[in-house]
Image (spheres, rainbow, N blue to C red):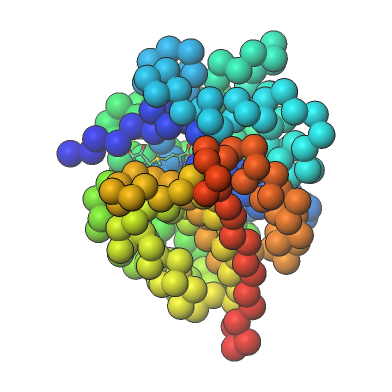
Length: 284
Ligand code: SAM
């Protein structure tokens, strides 16, 4: 039984980091005409209302996208992300937040394809409705995205980005991420894989980046944003990270001006900080 609904969290600090990186990765793929496939293993509902329903409950977006909404002097990649969100709110009032499938399709060209997996019965219905507008460019599969990797890789054009963004409510998700990436890299070694993870004090979350670094990719980039000091009781998410296997070589420089600004603007207390590391494996 799935209980996680992304609508509660839409537009929060974790979405800001995730979608800023996701859009930068797609912009890089857009530099060549050759088509690519975007795979979203845990797609969510696609678009969320910020003015009614679940998102209003804790109004998490007020600590995320809302803090950047009126800024006009942002570093390029962050300005690009905020501009994409503005495209879903053409009158300038922040009412809708596009999830990863909608952010992606807003940036992709007509020759590119999206394969979107969502397991939750209600969110998959919403996703199908929200993606209808994109026609055959967006294919929704109601099913397990970890398993979906096997079905869709390698993409026909051998160019692609895979976003893996599970809820991690079930701690088995940490191992499933590692296993799915093992499969993915076997089938599509040159693909770019972006994995979102929560910063939590539980062992599985703390050790995930180290385990991802061991995977047989040519290079990796690790970017993480903590918005607060971890709580002394050991509970709660204090930030999140994106781990990218086979990142574009430009991504590190792209994120350099972004991360200090995010750590400042999205800080919830003096414990806010960021990590930005890039590594190339000698043997590849
Ligand atoms: N990627 C989305 C975004 O950025 O807008 C948010 C995704 S949310 C963090 C995780 C989603 O994964 C939830 O909608 C949940 O229902 C779905 N889910 C959970 N287990 C899944 C599985 N094994 N395969 C596909 N989707 C799953």
